[in-house]
Amino acid sequence: MSDSDKKAPYLEARDALAALIAQAAHEGGTAPLQLAAAVLEEAFNTLQATILGNGLDEEALSSSFMTSLASAGRFWSTCWIWEQQKPADICWIHYNKTSESRIGADFALLVATPGTHTEPPGFRMIVIQAKLQKPDEVNRLSIEQAPAWGAKLADGQRNPKAEAAEQALRSLLDDANARSIDVEQDHFQLSKLIELRNRFRELNKAQDLPEPDILYAIWPAGRSEPLYRKLADAIADIQSHELKKEPDASACQRRKITQSIDIKYEDRLRHWLLNVACGGGDSDDGSGGVSMGATEAKTAFDAVKALCSATIILDLSGTGLGLALLNEIGLAPAPALEPVIPAAQDDRPTLNM
Image (cartoon, rainbow, N blue to C red; front, top):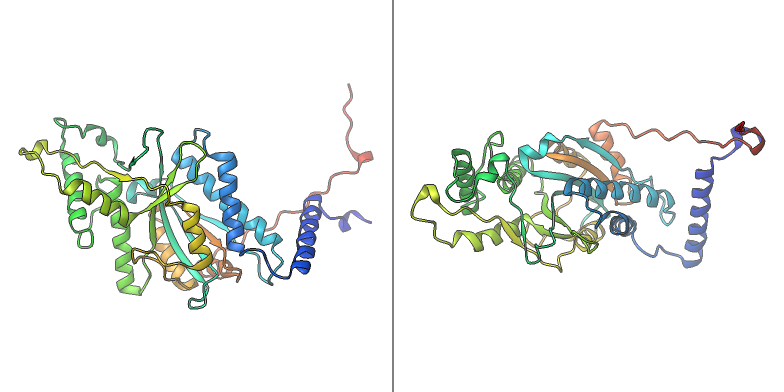
């Protein structure tokens, strides 16, 4: 066999694994689970076993999670033999560290889902702000995030920027649907997330674009499962805890808003994503739940790529929707790596001692 006919060891191992899976599929008939479930379970297992509990901050954990998703998606789409399909296309599309400071979101997922008996395959937009749960945050999680002036919010140390930002947040909490902020000014992160949601609502009016799911992902300090809270739940939580309290008599010494949300240990991020990816489940707060075609997904991608630090396309549909979206965006798929054939034993260089 000539060198040109040799198969790279990695490809040989991958093809052998695919052959074993194909044999099991032939004997068993149908896939034991959906492609979407295999990818998400693999990603969360990797996160749980190797990443969580190692002292990483929320940005590093978020990047690790996205990398785990991309790796799991590529692996399982390569080995998936139960249906004829194009490989799921996963691309880390966009990264911009300055975006989060403008609008408050860490990353967005454009997930192509397989659909249901009533909904065809399509994309869901999921926008995530990550928070690291500290060991002492057992019942409530602090979501307060502000520029450098945030450290001066204690009573008696007010300043004009802090006052303006807090007044903007109070206005948004009073009537989040009717307010907007200038993202070039100093604002709390929660205000910016509400602004992001409102911008998508404007797109919905103009272009019939579904509202994204906006979540807080809660990375645990240890190796327990990541949790989540929806933005709508966080707003309602803060409203019930904060806005019913009477402010101090002096406006300039007004008690600041405590931006914290209840931790619900039954709200597991893995379970929610599995429901969305495998069943296309609707959000129980009325947002999200409506899938988009590739053209609509491109509009959503264009809207969010300047507002989130990173955006990834994850095709869990089994229909090649990822490739369709890449064509809409005009981004060519990554070229395949050239095979590496190790030299024969006799050809390897020797070390002269």
